[in-house]
Amino acid sequence: MSRNGRLTACVASCGTTLATASLCLLASKTPTPLAYLIGTAAFAAAALPIGYYLGLKYDRLKEASILDSLTGLYNRRFIESNFKKLATKAKRNRKKMTVMLLDVNDFKEVNDRMGHSQGDTALALIARTLTECANYGEIIGRWGGDEFILICPYADDKGIDRIVKLIHEQLYSISLRTGLRLSVSVGHASFPEHGMEIGQLLQAADKRMYAEKYVRKAQLTEPAALQA
Image (tube, rainbow, N blue to C red; front, side, top):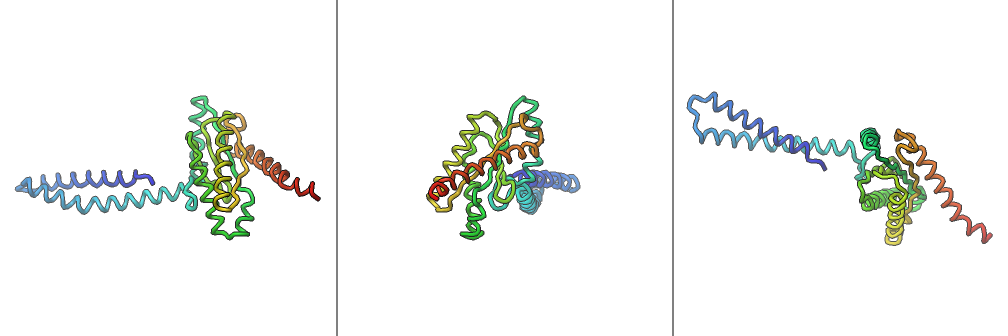
């Protein structure tokens, strides 16, 4: 959680305390150092807790506005509102980015077979896995439902293959440990090659993702078809 609100509120409380104490000192006919210190301490004792509490409320509200409550990842609103800034910076520095879209495979089956609480657990585990795999400045978010998004500050095949492989390996390991059979289909698109806007990039990534889903389902059904 960000501490900006609490820090700002405490600094403002200290400034208000000193300003009030100074005014009281100027208004007093017989100011004494002891009276000044006592007054300052008393005002600070009242102002600082109030300032900290208000700052804490601000930090929590700000966090709730940008984070997904289930997974703790950035939410769709945050991703959409910040992508333009990232794109502008990348364009200015002549850098490429990758937008990666991930869809949980057979998530409806998990919900139907094991219940929505286990479905929530599965999403939280996937979110944690993505966070652990992001070692090169990737921004991770929950795009909605069982879809996740990664914005990677690179667009080379080696970097993309590295993180995709790592995600698959980690989810396979978790599946063996929990019995939840977690896996994702992944599609990606590069900025600015496949688009300048996040909508364009997601559309391109979505096509690749569903192509991967199709191949996966074909591979799963092929043995059964051969046996028949």
